[in-house]
Structure formats: structure tokens, C-alpha cells
Length: 156
Image (cartoon, rainbow, N blue to C red; front, side, top):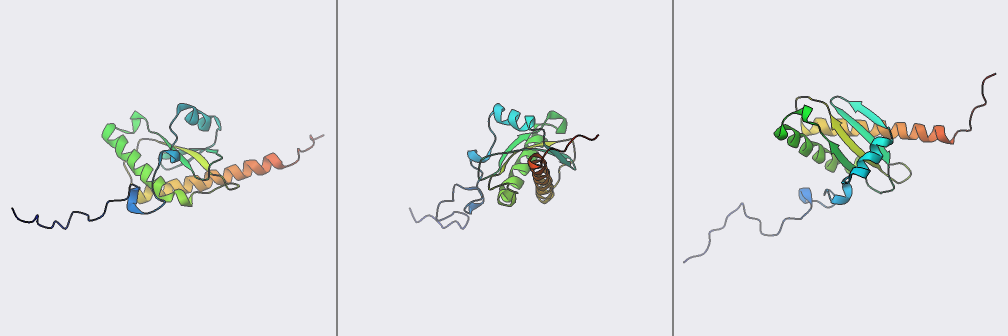
């Protein structure tokens, strides 16, 4: 028996367990909303922004990083379509989690919901997600400023 021929497709070194192979771009469990109580807490905060086919629900958290939850109903399409959409949204979040706005050094818990639509490209989902996160952040800032203002005296 001779030597095994070299296959250029085989990697010499192991692949990093993080997605994308780069440091800091993984999507560990700590970046996900995983329990019903976490989802209910975000929905109860009553902060919703919409853009295109997506709706983003947010709540301020005490973490140094944003966390993502997905709520994609059957109305969006069959299982294959829903799973493809969820993969695209997770990837858009993963690639842009460092660019997400923060408030007082803390970040947000986010739930993305979608209305029925033809699937968009990853770049389009990235743009929509960042647009929604920034709009939601601006609303959180407005609400925080309003809460810190002195109450106005009633009109005579």
C-alpha cells in the first residue's frame, strides 16, 4: 500500500468551534433567549418596532451583549421556508451583534417575528435588523428620559 494522496479540500488544522472561524463571531447559548419566561418578559415590556416584514420586540437586559429569540409562525410558510428564514435571521444577528446599540453599557433582549413574505437576502435582513435595533434603542432612550423628567403640574 502506498501513501494516501493529498486532498487539497482537507484541512491541516482543526476548524475553530466558533462560527465563521473568527474570534468573537460565534453564537453561543448565552446569546439566545431559550426559556418561555424570557420570551414572556420581552413581550411584556411592550416595546415593538416594525420594518418591512419583520417586527422586533425588545427589553433592556443586564448583559454586556444582546440576546436573540425568534418567533416565526406557520403563516410565514412551510417548515423549509421557516427554517431558512430562522437561519438567515440568526446569521444576520450573529454578524451584527457587536454593532447593536447599548444603553448604559448594557444591551437588549430581542425577539424577531416575521409576517409572510418572499425570503430576502442575508444583507437585506442585516439592514432591517440593524434599523429595527436602532429605532428600538431610540425609543428606549426616549422612555428613559421621560421617566427621569419631573412630573408636570396639571393644567388649570
